[in-house]
Amino acid sequence: MRHKPLFVAFIGLMLTASAHAQWKWRDAQGKVQYSDRPPPSGTPEKDILQKPLSATRSITVVPVGPAASAAEAAVSAKPAASAPTRAELDAAARQKQEQDRESSKQKEEERRANEQRRDNCARAQAHLRGLQNGQRITRINDQGERVYMDDAQRLAEVERTRTLITTDCR
Image (cartoon, rainbow, N blue to C red; front, side, top):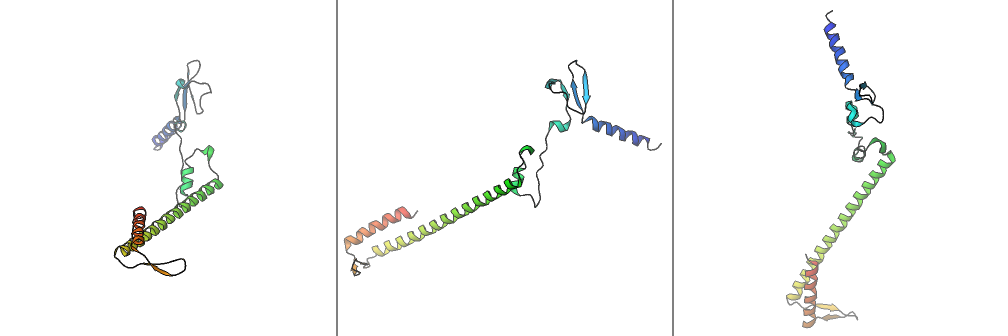
């Protein structure tokens, strides 16, 4: 007899727990109906008085842990009807890797181009300093002979080098 209050409380909890999974609606004759199944199709929404919690919200499960990749987590947020296959996940991962490779390749090319531009700029500035300091500058002609630049050639080379510096040294 000492367990009777505990037993009654347990039965009460069980009844209230099952009541949460109940549907409540008004039928065509206006009578209130209770069931663990949804009302018949065609029942107007205004006549449905209570829905179980499981019918009012959906739960999305996202895998976590070392086995779940970012692609799997992103794709698993989709509805279950369009769940991706393993092949689709692998294809998405390969595509992401290819994009990452392309991006790093492009960044490397940009870095090399910037480095080359800086090097060319430094050379052009050094050449301009040499032209302006009055040193005698020689060139090799078509016959392979060493020929000294005259003042007109020097001025033309200074102008060409300045133009090169203004366009390439940013």
